[in-house]
Length: 327
View 1 (cartoon, helix red, strand yellow):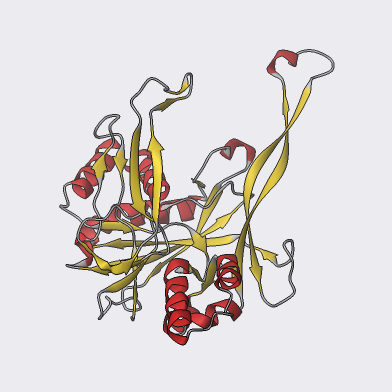
View 2 (spheres, rainbow, N blue to C red):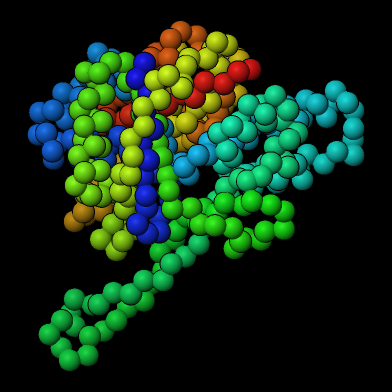
């Protein structure tokens, strides 16, 4: 397998960290712009038909990985039951674990082997919500002496690196460097995507991963592309940490520790907004941070499906990047 880490730098605030589906859509859009619509259509078709294997992760703070919070809590609950310590406050432990959204890559194996250490690990990334004040000029006021100004707020996601105890909600350094992982089964598969990222790095073209890019939000620039072929081997135990939005196919549910994310899908158009008449359609994914046990090879873990709103244009990308762990 070919494994890559794409390092990005944000130029402003972010409304939320983009998931693997959004990253896939953005890369396909850029591929279409740089190499033509046929190249993008061929890649999407090949991924859907499983003629090639392509997997992506969500976007993470650089050097950090998501904490498998549900797995850690499950192990701590089992330990509490075995030791019969009624005074141990699992609610308090859960609060400390939930605070740690991301930890250093090198600390992952430690908390998997000794779940209790998760509550005392530093540094970690704390994720919180905030509001950013924005201003706009009313269109009707153009050409008039006093333009009417309108103030509004935009919800944003704030990520801070907490390096020690006692750092409050607004303490810690704000994260501005991010990365996502890319995996493919061959040079033929990965070349169009990597070459697109390389061209964006050379030209300084931003990768748009969310709304309000015209206001400076959700804009990222490619800083570096690292090849991880020799650094990231398959798991000997068949256990992996899910790093994206996984639409499961061939996994071992009994040995896995899963958290589900369910979303409603409906068509959207800029002039009309959300189509309220269209039948409601829901889809569930295995969320980032879940511990997944595989039944077969890594290329069979996830799958992709066509959206109900039209083939060739709306592929629901479900091939999440799986990070090998030793359990």
